[in-house]
Length: 199
Image: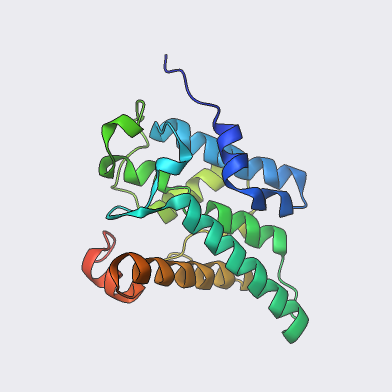
């Protein structure tokens, strides 16, 4: 039996934004989804998961935090400036979980010494991380509103909510910054050239 690291502690240390989730049960579900993903993916450290299969200069943790911070600020502007009422718990939880599926998808793109023993039932690049992230959120019992905001590729969810749009736009904003700083290209250019989900 594999002796796993203290994933809960890793997740809590990696994502201080968890404390902004007011609903205790939802906060626990977010942590549980990450712990499951890390265990099944066989990761030694949450910080070893890269932002993208071919961009290792930026970690997935940095990107997820960036998305969460951008979305939280955007939600504040939507409330204060436009009078909208986005559900901040849903936004934060979905942002924190939007790339948890990379625990499964990216095991084939890192050095073996960063991994323990990935579970082949889950760990594969065959399922896009937004879909496996949704599945993890569903498995741990996250509310439907959170689950629906996780898939972030066009067409995965037929009717998008205000919260889902915020997650999607924050993801694009963070991703554009990362692809620009790491490779000197836009997210659109990166997707066209390197995305594994394109036809």
